[in-house]
Image (cartoon, rainbow, N blue to C red; front, side):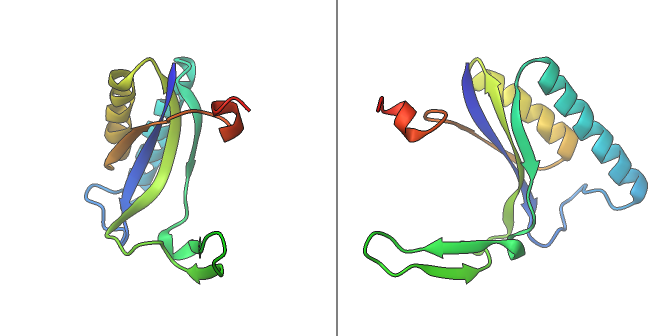
Length: 129
């Protein structure tokens, strides 16, 4: 099994087409997402997931070896979309991960980026030290 990151993209201004607007729409949205997460869990695909605060809550730390560190408010880049949440899943292959991504799209009505992990766990476990 491989692990994949399913990034859930949202609009920075919150004006996502089809986004829940009323309490009833939000309740339906949450029911779809909870059902999806239960399906992922039952299939053994769900590893971890979470929702993120908006980019206005981000803090960026930059600099490198021998450079002064700089801490600034806000997102790393200006963009119309940002990662609003994510799932880390296990799937046999990319096709399996894409099948789960399609279900996330159906449940959330948000674009999903699928990326395989190069490795899992700590870097020292990946390089054999």
